[in-house]
Length: 76
Image (cartoon, rainbow, N blue to C red; front, side, top):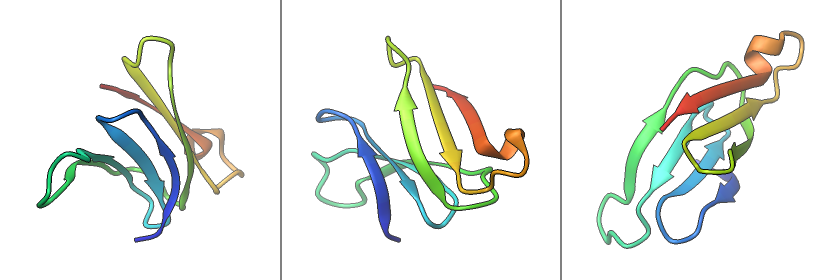
């Protein structure tokens, strides 16, 4: 897995990936730091972004021919 974008302070760190997933990492854990994996994109994830109170996460991928594949919203 190659990380494309990382967002976060200390916890959680959120990353989009070329394997079409969004990952949540606990950087304070020595073993198995990945604590969640969101699936659903049909292309590599380019970016992730929180809303103002970090209750909603948006992610987008490289598939631009369909707006549904371009932007996903995740309640967290």
